[in-house]
Length: 203
Image (cartoon, rainbow, N blue to C red):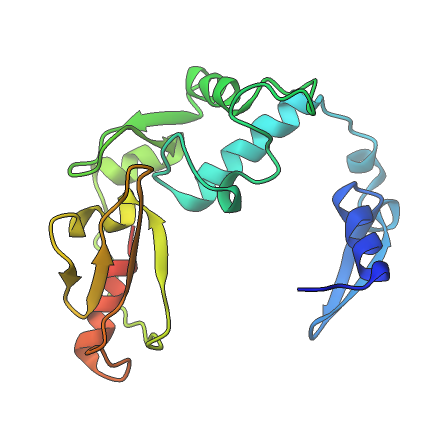
């Protein structure tokens, strides 16, 4: 969406760490100098860029769960290219950073039945995969226009069919991207549709 110059400058200063988001009031944002928002010891603690990028990459796996080595810009945006990039002279690239996290045992490669390629999870989640807890009962109501997009991890169960309950699924393509979305016969108000929605959305 188009934005005005003031908002663009404020957001640029926030990205570079000069300003921070002090509070929100509805959809209005209030900024302040970062040194007035954070303790002095935090502001004065300078980490090497490589360590910052490694932490940022780990946060992606912590947030999404069961990610593979690839992913779109909406997942790995801001981390540079997979290989060393001339625009980021200090960055070794995501591939090297990921290898470091695996070597440090922060990321653990796992195999998921029915999904091609290795998946990686954070160390704390390995126990959950070995003995998954029983999920609590839940219901999700989705509008007919809702689309679930993701990698083969979320649509792998539908790779051999075009319909899963009240959802129509497009099998993963060569890049591993697939899509599940409500079929024309699905209704958000029905309990059956709600149960299917919850099951399909769960990774």
